[in-house]
Length: 236
Image (cartoon, rainbow, N blue to C red; front, side, top):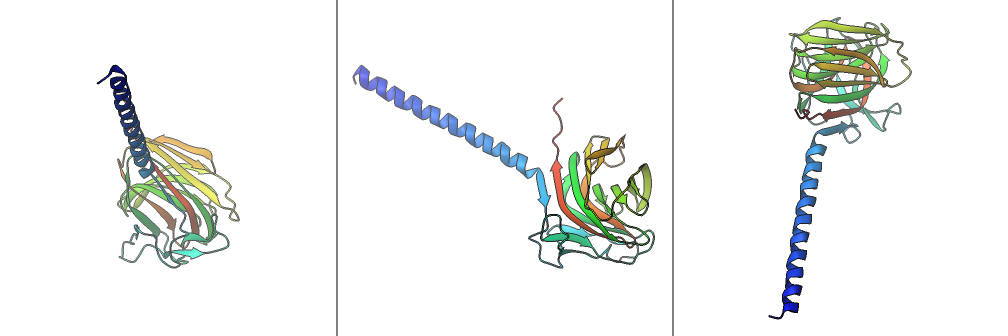
């Protein structure tokens, strides 16, 4: 084989090696992107059949065994991202009836969680909230906004009993959609209302668990644009 042909052959081999290396880098990048995307979940409820629950959304129960609320997807012109919302529609309830729904396959330790809500009605209670690190429907963290009391609160709920961690007085307009957001890393919990931080505290009661939505007593509330980002642990 002449030196010229050997040189051309070597160039061809080198070119193929470069292509193979580039392909491996691309596949590695796509794999990393897929892993990253799997940590982000969004629910807009627009593909959920009316009067049904989204997949993996499971009703809790009251202490007497009844379903914890009347939750279903509905179509409404009030939707934040039309056409559907997830609504809690039970209009009657005892003082300590917590209407809640949990989302299976969302177990997380550190997370960035948010939802938008629209208060519709309620005489004993009004508004709604976010649940996270839920072991079950009796044990979880909760932050909620109540237009009747004009405040935002964060609780830990243990064996179905709420324990207040912090309160923040806030004017809540019942004519508008509002957003609650939680960022929880380790023991540090930050809560935001309409993009303004209202709480920053440390609590170590629950290490991980599922997410969910919550109302109380007779509060009828619409929820839209539920977003979950499971955060990766920082490198040491």
